[in-house]
Image: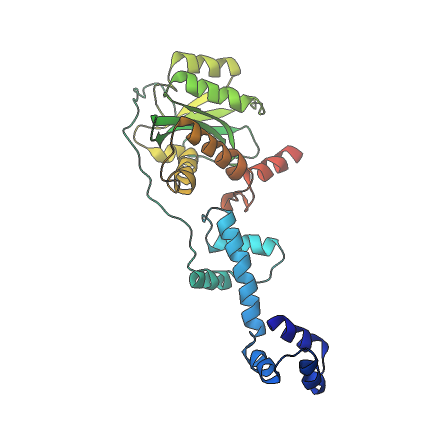
Length: 291
């Protein structure tokens, strides 16, 4: 009946309402009751914004808070304040996902003597392929136990430019990750790659590979995760946004597929970052290539 009432309101003058209600067999009293209860312009606008906000929130795995959702809405031409978004999200019961990070036992480390921290927590860049950071994180599966994700991130774009997933945490895994990064990225003359002091990164094979490529190797200080904050942050986001919400992966293959979808389908292509002016890693890379 509301569709009928909408038609009457849009097409009939007030003095003709009675006649139109008779033609359409719609009770005149019901029409006026509906008109009184019809949402105000403000209520209708809030309802529209609620749909937009909810859409952005759920499309992005529930990880965006009000600032990022506000940025996206403004980018789409909406004119509203951050405070308005915060109020609507609170009423909708939407807030960004926050989960504590869990780490199993630490991997073996080696002595740091003679291994310099070239990065020294200076994460600034002027373009791509100047500073890369790398690390390994643990992913648990029900049937295959602990598995290992090795990644390389370009600090300029926040993009994961190389990654490999394996059942063992070996020097081969990190070398294959480097090879993956090199498929589409050419090191600059002074490229630095930063890692922790894990035995995979200090192996003769890995060091020889970097020397062959003329890539300088930088190491985190012992017990100082802030030295490799970029890749630590990525792994924390991965756990919070993909691994923990999934509850558990059945096996290695299921985890591999989920990680591929997250890294290549979501993180690099769709996830915006406030630190790169609310762009995605792929968009930031495109800008760098065009410069």
